[in-house]
Structures are given as structure tokens and as C-alpha cells.
Image (cartoon, rainbow, N blue to C red; front, side, top):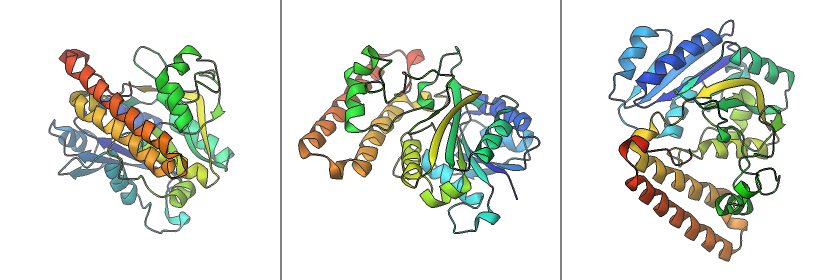
Length: 306
């Protein structure tokens, strides 16, 4: 039985993908694993580079960019998930990994041992840091309920960063080096137990990019699985290697994901006035973010969630 299937979705990130795959190779021993790269129609030579330098990676070259969730599901199905197979015929764990990450040598062994020791955990994520050493706040999050979203976008979370109530979305009230049960971890590095994934189902392809990780964690927790942030492992996340090159599309996808997640999980049980306010707020935030992006110089474009 394989311990792990690693799925990496690539879109024109050759410059960071090489570093990622080298770190995966160093971190995967002595784990029984397979690595599946799904390329979303890149034009930067990524596929040729991987096939030449990393022949042990199974490379699936798609002719179009169908989105992050779509491509991850291709990789997960190639590993056997989502097809009604028995758990005995599947890798014990699946790892969704972004190509703009660099793993320390002990990352995979440490987190798999952690999951083995805690069979009630369905999803775990490590501490992610940016190039400057700062915490990537997306690595531990609360679900964006109407209240949590209001606190976050109104500025109350920034005013009261140590408040478990107001700072719930980015959980800034927690010590970054403190292990904690959380609502969600980020899809840049998401280790999922096979049983939890089979119960919850694959990623929702209604999300083009952003939001699909929140949604999968939501569905895992709804089935009784714990989602845990474990800072015993620290992973470098360069962040935005692909989306920064198409910032307007990334911003639009970010706000689309907010709407999809809200409609899917909260709209039916929320007062119509609140729903109206959410729709208005998301629309205004989207327009403002796109305007700011248009005014920024090319070298200062950034991802919507950065």
C-alpha cells in the first residue's frame, strides 16, 4: 500500500516548480509515495522540464486551464480517489501541494506520523511562511460565516487581532507556533486522510481557484473529522507564482469563490436582508480590488488574498 499520493497543479510556474520537486524528493524518503503533476496548459516549458529532470513524476499535460479544483481532481482520480475503490486499494493519504512551496526534509514523515497517531484527524496543514519569514495567514482559518466575514472586512479583525471573536478568520489570536484545531487549512499544503477524502468527496469544481480548500475542509468537518494546524513543520510558500501573472483574473476568481462558498453553505439559512448585504458587499469589494489592481504598476501586482 502506498503511504501518500502527492498532487501538484502547475500553471506557468517553471521557475519555482523545480525547487518544489527537489524538496519533495528530499522529503519523501523513506515514504512509499507517488507524485502526480497536472499541468493546466502551461506555455513556459514546465512540462518538458519535469519530464526531463524528474522522470519519476507522473506528468499529466492538459490542453487548457480548467482551474485549480478541476486539475487537482484529475490528479486525485489518477491516484485512485473518488472512484468507489476500497480504502485498501488507495494511498493512505493524499497531499495537495502548490508548486510555489519548498518543503523541509522532515515535512512528510513528521506529518504522516502525526496523522497516524491521531486517527480522528482528517486534514492537517503545516505552518506556512513567506519569503520574508512572515506567517502566511491563510494556513489556518475560520470559516467565513456572515459574522466572521463582517469582522474581517470591516477592519474589526485588524483593530482587535487578539480577539477570538473578531479575529476568527485569520486566527491571529493564536500563537503561530501553537498547534490548534481550526476550521480550515490552505490548499497550498493540505494533507488529507484517504477515508476523509472518500467520505467528503473530491474538490468542488465550481471554484476555479480559491475557496475549494475551505469547502473541502467544511465537508470533512461536517462528517466529524478534525482539521488541525500543526506548526511542527514549517513550509516556505512563495505565494502567487501563477496568479500574480494574471492578477485581474485571480482577483475576480477570489471574489467569485466568496460568493460560491456563501451561496453553498450559508444563504439558505440566512435572512434575506443579510443575503442582500453580503451580495452588495462582495460586489463592491470586487470592484474596489479590480480598480486598485488597474492603478498599480506592473511590478506591484498582487494576489487578491495576499
